[in-house]
Each structure stands twice: as structure tokens, then as C-alpha cells.
Image (cartoon, rainbow, N blue to C red):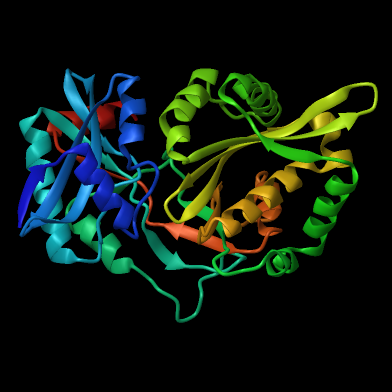
Length: 350
């Protein structure tokens, strides 16, 4: 085996075939990161010119002019393959040290434990504790308050008809979808120049629910990078509202990459949520799109921890659960500190 830099196109071809692929590990995300001052590189392990593991890694000076290295949604590797994992990370550590790096941050798109709709462990299901042990043996520590979600909610849609999908939803969810249709709500895709309509909705929703919204430039950049490849959609649900005319009721952003459609960001006009249920119709529209275009998974993306009825964010999980599916627990976000100076600095901060 050998460890080396590869081209963006070599990396794209490898990732497209991997079961651990994520839209976060793409040359387009590398370009997005470059706009914020990060430098991207593509690194891989090869054997007989075949790529066995690879990662997009970005770096930026943040601590005493030393570089912070991050593999967003990566690396793309079977973490239960101990020999490959050790070879990959030991060479990656040397690479980072060579280029004056002090830390490596990873958040692989890699499932840890099989869970059901309620977040309970599936008896006899898979459990990739070996992957976790391999990372710990290499010195990685789990990060708290990481930016990427550890728990997702997904709905398998492969080879399921529209009727089968609808019947798998909870009764209330089906009723909300039908009500939206009766109220004349329609769903359409936004053009680039219309992205400000989505931004208005997400901005008002972020203020109401106290989360940080993305700037309009983010949505525009994602459109420019992914739309031409057919890998992003910005959708709105509208209706003719009395005394208002055609009104945007709800808006959302979806990645359509690899085997899955990923529901990333959304917002709804609070005045019309209960009467029109537009947020349900957008999901139903995109689930149908995913099924008709041979995607395997509809990914509702992050939920805040395992389901807890007493959590203030339980309603988000309950909304997603209404569309069937199950909880996915990822392996999580990890960091490997490569400079003793940073260890001292981190302790002093706390």
C-alpha cells in the first residue's frame, strides 16, 4: 500500500462508488471551503493503483500560525478494516505534521449502531464498535458540541410505490399532506435569482427558533457549485392566501447526491403553518421525487440526540418520525491533537 495525493477527479470517482460517500466529501465542498480561506487537498491509500481509502482534507492557520486540518464528512474508509485504518491515519498524521498542522478533526459518514424508529437499539442489528475502537487506539477523542449531527432520521424508499410510502406515514402526517393539497398548496423549484425567497423564510424561522441561519451567499454558492450537476434543489411551497395573493409558505434546501436525498435547511411562515401545512407537502413532494428517481434513502438529516419527549427539540424528531423511517447513529466527530502546545492551550482555556 502507498499513501499519496490524488487529483480531484480521481477522488470524485472513488467516492461515487463508496458506501461511505457524503456530499461533504466532494470537490464542490472543497471549492466552497476555499471561499472561506481553507486550502483543500485530496489524499488516498492505493494498492496496485486501486484506491482503497481517501479523504478531502482542508487546512487553515488558526493557532500560533499552525494549521487546523479537517476532513468534513470524512474520511471515506471502512473504519473496521484495522490494517487499512492504521496505515491511512498513521500516514495522514505524518502528512499533517510535515505541513505544520496541530490537530485533525474528522466526522466520518459511518454508522455505529443499528437503531429503530424510536431510537432503540435493534436486537441482532449491526454494531460497529470495532471502528470506534480503531479510532480510539489511534489517539482520537470524541468532540463535544460538534458542528455535524451524530443522530439522523432516514426513510428507506428503494423499490417502494407512492401508495406504500404514504401508507407507511403516521395518520396525522397523511392528514396534514391531504389538507395542504385541499388548500391549494403547490410545490416548485426556485431559480438562482429567487433564492432570496428561501432566505426570507429561513431568516425569520431562525429568529423564532433561535438558531443561526446561513447567509444568502451560502445558498447562492451551493447553487452555483451543485445545481449544474443535479445535486441540489431549493424548493418552495406556495398558495393563494386571501388578501395576500400567491404567498411563499415554506421553503427548503435539499442535496440530491449519491444514493440519497438529504433535507438540509428549511423554514416556514409561522402565520400559515397550522392552516396550510405546507411544510408537510414539501417533504411529500421530495420523497416522491426521490422514489421516482431511484434514490435509496430519504435523509431528514439531524435530530438533537436520541429521542427524548422532554427535550425542547422533540417536536423536530416527531415531525420527521411521522414520515416513517428510523434513527441513524453515526460514529460521531473526533479530534486528534498533534501538538503538545495545543493540549496546554486547550486546558488553560477551560
